[in-house]
Length: 67
Image 1 (cartoon, rainbow, N blue to C red):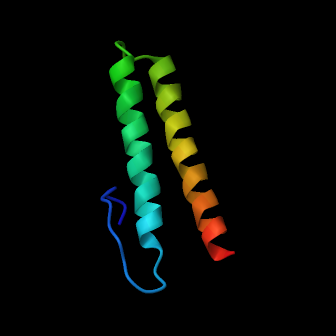
Image 2: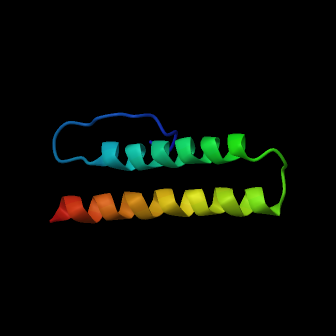
């Protein structure tokens, strides 16, 4: 599951939403790395922000799904 593939599981298993969140985080990380030309502290902080954003989106989607 943590490989970022977009998968869908039938039944009550909601792992596809977690995979979707991880895939979104990877896409955002790729965009940030392409926009930055130098490997620096700014790029590290940008990647950290993107990973945190992906985690927050995954948590929100999971919480909304439980309601």
